[in-house]
Length: 511
Image (tube, rainbow, N blue to C red; front, side, top):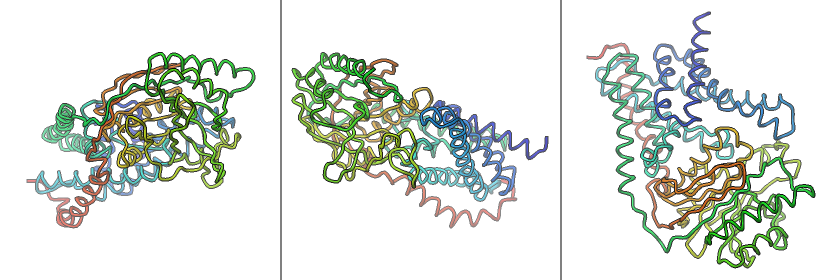
């Protein structure tokens, strides 16, 4: 086996390992899984770094998007090769992404310096560059959440490390994750324990600062707390309401409503498109649901498509409906899925286009005013977009509701990631959040990240708990671009000053 082929296969393998760490949310593994790429970059030139990075990213993509082979072909009704094609295209995308990152890393990479301090500054610059490029990519992929990729995301599973996101969002977690990998790689390259100590120190710093933040955070309540009952029928998205199964589906909804109403909540929260048709005040199913809970002073918050009679546009919406069947508020989804909810060019995934579900974007959607404060709303992929929650909070939201449908992804890692993005929104913005997710994890999460209640099942699910509205505004919510801009300033200063001086010292051994 040739050396180039061997290096390529090794890079591909380590890419698969990185994907496993990232999608299965393994903190320890994510802290060392980029190390091989940095070691290869150190040992090779820019041109070779391109191919090594490509194979590494390809390995990540092959693992990350493997579900598309079965999932896409299954739910679109197209053949096996349609899913394979999307799998390959998506994997190549990550291959080219990491090829660029590896080339850029090699261009900046300092193999030797007169002092350890100069080397540390160089690695800080590289970590900052990875962070900024990832941030820009995430901004471009707001409407493509299935291709969303954040290196530091596994740290949101830990109650302490997730606290850092209230300061700098996911970008801060990515920065520290890349920096830890750089120091561990330096330990391997130089065989100096000092760099391993640096890596462990960064990791310890994350947990210590996170623990301090967790134990010192105190929400500023506004108004009184309230009870929510989150319900989900967990209906398979392939199933369509018809004369044969309609009564069964309806009875399941009625039973869920009865069980929820018996708990005397203030809100019953339903998932995205819980009623898979367009809203009508005379809808028989909706009227019966309202009738079941009419003896209780509560509000149904339910996902239904909404057709605007004036502009003839269809929206993916959430309705706030009182126990008297009065609509008290509507939120229309603002970030649509490209190629699924709105066309990508002229392309639209068949499983929706067959029903004519071409949606329009809601614009400048404000939080919905309730008797307990203002409710911020996040529908489906909006919970993945960090600025969606921050924007709702900046507009006055005192708590958050998330509505999703994970029926398409119930058997793979995406469902778990969806849940942890909701947890991320809670901590980043310091707001309690409820999660209503068909075929996914239904939950109520505190503003400090503590999970009050959660459940995932294949049958009807009911989750119950308390939400406390608050007026807290985190640093991230108020200044979401603070850390990206700080990274950019540092990188520019380094490249314009220290880099120009140290580039002459690449071959000079350290003192």
